[in-house]
Image (cartoon, rainbow, N blue to C red; front, side):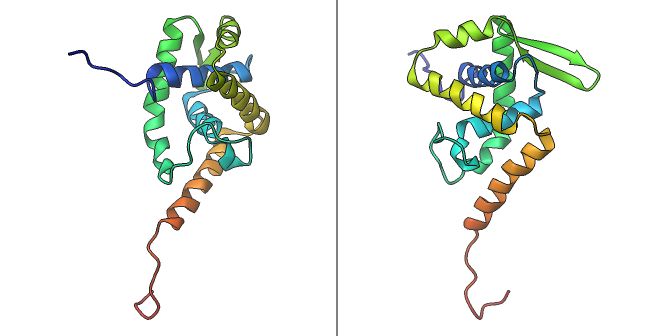
Length: 161
C-alpha cells in the first residue's frame, strides 16, 4: 500500500508560494522572517484589505504562523535545489532571492490558483514591500490579537471581572 502525500502545505506548495513572493520582489531578496509574514498576507490577502484571500478564512488561522516558518524553509530548499531560488549570505544574515529562471517557471504555471497566487504576491509586495519586517509583523499580529479576543469566553454579569 503506497502512502499518499497531500500537496497542501507541502514543500512544493510552500516553495512555489515563496518563489512567487521572491519573484514579485525581484531583484530584492527577503530573509525567512519576512517571507513568513508576506506568505501569510499572500494567502490571506482579504484580512489585510486586499483582494479576496486564496485560502479559506478559518477561525483558527492565527496558529498558521507557528508552523509556517518550517514549511517555508523546506519549500525554499526545494526551490534552491531546482535553481529557482538563490540563498545569499549578507552581513545581516541569509537572504533569499528569485533566480533568473524563476520568472519563466512561474509564467509556465497556468492553473487558476497559480495565476491568482502570483497576482496576490504582486499585491503584497506593492502594499507591504516598502515596510520593515517588524512593521509587517505588527500588522499580522494585530489580526491575531483581534481573533484571539473574538474567541475568548464572554464574562457573565455579576460573576467577577
